[in-house]
Amino acid sequence: MAQMATIIRGTNPDLILDAGDLFTGTFLGDEFKGMPTIQAMNKIGYTSGTVGNHEFDYGQDVLRMRLRDARFPVLSANLRTPISEIRKYTVVTAKGIRFGIIGLTTEDTRVTTHPKNLTGITIQDVVKTVQEVLPELRGKSDFIIVTAHLEDNEEKRVANAFPEIRLIIGGHNHSTLGPNWLGQTLIAKTGSNGRNVGRVDLDFDGKNLDRIEGQLIPIMNITADPEITKIIEPYQAKVAAKLAEVVGQATADLTSSNNSESALANVIADADREKGKTQIGLHNIGGIRASILRGPITWGSVFEVLPFQNTLVTLKVTGTQLKNALNVDLLAVSGIRVHFDLKKPAGQRMVSVTLSDGSPIDDSKLYSVTTNDFVGAGADGFGELGRGREIRDTGILLRDVLRDHIKAHRVLSPILDGRITVN
Image (cartoon, rainbow, N blue to C red; front, side):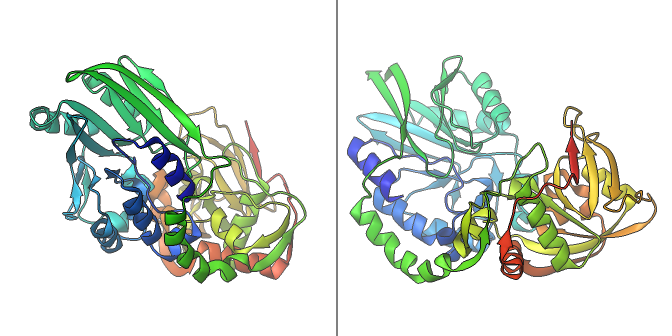
């Protein structure tokens, strides 16, 4: 944030926009429920933000508090929500041009966010939403921008349906894309984790757009802005000792993969299964957000691996339910051996599965499983697990499970044992 501030203030922009997932995913963000980020954004002077799927990670009450703390509007036109602080759009004037800014949140939030955090909230089709908002906004603005926390296909749908919208700022997928054109619409993305700042230059002839250009500015070798550093330092001081605590050693780098067996995914699934005392451990690959590097393993680095507020859940499923869950997509597994074919469509990717000792999975038999509350609630398409029996949420954070596992074993080495094979 402090380095971003240096870049932003150095360019003296007319508008400063964010396309969502404002504060989840760092130790500092989670420890203080997003407060340091919002305070830094206030000081930088953001024009607007967007509601991302991870804005709900701390629950609706915390989200309300953070939105009230923000001195800028946070937008989402396609959320039907009791949170009155979320606005559909905002209009701001810069250099004599009235800019209408619409926020959109991915429809996949239904499955990428824990269902308990979406109580009372419905998510509307993005194209239909823009159709509803545009007539009202056209009379109030000269140029319309969409800040889109959307999947790529949703961005394309919006761009194709509304060629008058010449600029979409994307913020959901972690890919870096900028600038990219869909017809006459510029789609600008800056990747993830504050690695880049995006700059868009708009030249107008009167009220008419004459030229639009975009560029990425990498955050490398940038001096931190002292004012933002001053905001963040007290929070860092409170958690510095905890972050630096060494909990174990890694003999080599442990990484994860979304298309093969990986050492880090194995460790996490094993840690979950051991803690849950079940036959099988399952963990969604998308929840693993960093690697463990060779050398001392700190509590801070463990947090970065599992940064979300997910908790350990145990349940029982039939063999058929287990197979259906494994058919959705690649999972980190423990206690079983699975063969996947990722070329096949979702629902057909699991080719075979046995217990670790080679015993076949009996379709009618019950198996005990440890997973997390996100997967256990049926999110990300794992509805079969959400329909399991004897579901028990332990309330124990996954990162605490991993930390305790590392402490108990002291030394981690990357091991691939063939529990997953992939076409």
